[in-house]
Image (cartoon, rainbow, N blue to C red; front, top):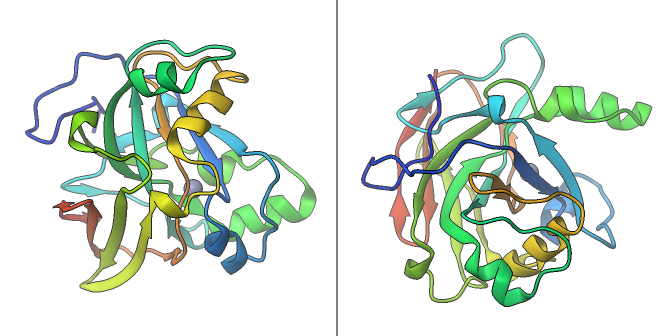
Length: 220
Ligand code: ZN
């Protein structure tokens, strides 16, 4: 299914579909659960636009490539260009929407790549690796440092977190990214996952939640 940014009411957002900038290990408890050290500066990686698919009503996971984990993440839709040294106010003003998405990760494959010191892309940037939910206007989030996200799978709570627990918060993260990758209108930033990542199975029913909003989806 082709992907277009959407508002929560299903209407299309008039921004192009661009790259996805992701941050690893942005919640200390998640870094610990995978036995990873907490990085001193944000650990960035990219997913191409071809990784984006709609989160709902369903999405696919790769078959025959080992465990595919859900990483439930607060997402930021970029509305205006951020490049180089930008102020916190400029970074905040560039936020067009706040949403929720899954950073799908082929965990067995990623572990092999990490051992070999190889890049992660084949484990994290494959087609369909970023099921992306709709966006809400940033005006609905009075405090970007107090956004709650969660995920239930088949009725069981798997993940719950708050942007309060991020090592690098949303606005400082946008400022850091802009010094390395120019953020363009239509790009998405995925802000890292709280703990509780686990494997998905075909047929799983998921309910991602974002500060009182929730959606229903399932794994094809
Ligand atoms: Zn992630």
